[in-house]
Image (cartoon, rainbow, N blue to C red; front, top):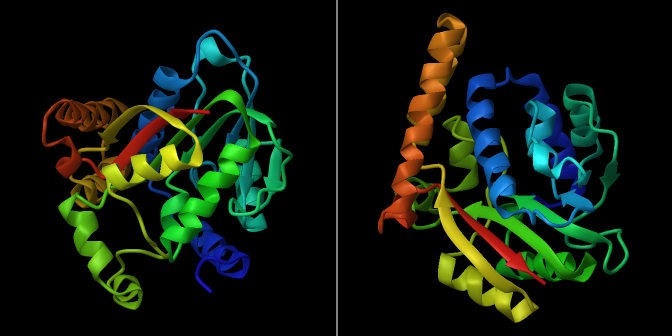
Length: 260
């Protein structure tokens, strides 16, 4: 079962054996941190749940903005090996092994939840809905739910969704399972049905992803530090495409901020 604990334990072990794409991770993590910088409430703080430790197992992961230093982050993952890797790599200490479809937290436990491309690894929309309902349950009234999902309107994502999993693995496109995702309108509908108020919805990560990852590997190994910084600056400029009407075609992820 590609959405169960055993599968993701194996996937975590495989990921840890691959050399990290450090420069690409810096860009990806910076975009996620920027979402929190813009969307976490400035007037309050509390417990923030991050719903998987993939980013933290490979690099620094999200960095809370200075203004939100009062927030305390709890990291969770279905795979214990991912949690161990996150603690080893990024020093995370508040960690919990649990399944987002059956969260081991009481109602009204968190002031904010950040679900970073966690829900797009399930085999059915019903499991996405179940996860959204669980996030609503453990979020305090007035709390913020920030999530990202693969954008099915992006041509690369759309093509990947059409290809069988075994072929993606054989071609080296992925080492783990990509599941169902939702179009922006459908995602908004399901969030509202769960009880959330959708405050912001946009598309992020607009650079040509495959080419950018390949380029980042070369530059990370060969370029001096100032060359690496210039490369990251170029990647950041692609985010201006998020202001255009075509943003849900160029963006690789849908990003949403909701409130309970």
